[in-house]
Length: 330
Image 1: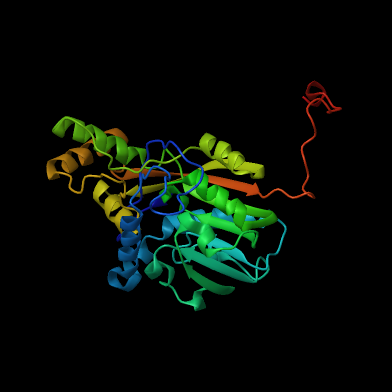
Image 2: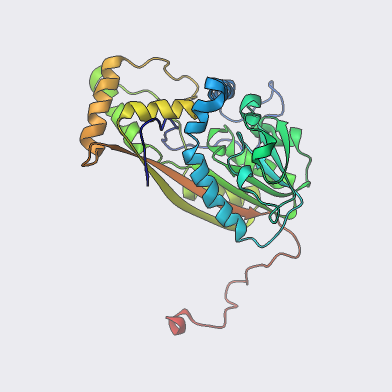
């Protein structure tokens, strides 16, 4: 649990549940592709803005969520007893996870992000391994990274912004070498449920309806199915929570903005009436407030691990071949 001290903690996305209509991205603008949930250009501009505010000082003050998730991902990566020649950090941002990689884990990290300003925010001196930076669209991974070229791909808090999650999982699998591993973390459907419900109730009361102020996200069951459909084997999916206490709803929304995690849903409303926001703040305090007056915000994180199939991988025994009864074990 984090507590927000004197200056700041700011904004991230929120989550109804997402449906999927395509498992492969559109090859060109004229082709039929996945339903566009997010405006990717707007998201890149939001990330650029977060990187340049006060020369990046503002965004550094709100790195706490991603750094915490990156630290938990490193623990999972250390459970895989391998040293890699290179690791691809997909949707790396300034390198929250890449900075935690050590020479005994990999010789080099390749950071890929759609925001060139955020990608280059921090100098190479802050990394312990060799760094290569690639400015590219996470949704079009195979335009930047050759097939069958990567030993390991990681993604820390980026995939909840892609329009075609099944498609990018297929591309990740294609970019991996046989027996290569993918380790990812993305925000799940219960993220910021406190803020989402408060905004919805306030808008319904004051304006007679609700708008998508919060981004749609997936859940752990979806991720397990999507990883399997993409062709990964030896799947592991688990869910964790990071909770942060804020002085008020306003600090939370400020921090989300400075993280580059503002709403980027296509067709979103650009303005929320002040009286609606004031009502949402009061509802937030009434429904979710702590005894000390602070307001909790929940970030649900889904962690996934999957391997590209290879002939030498261990395989599950066929059904009915077991020799020990579960009754005997229990």
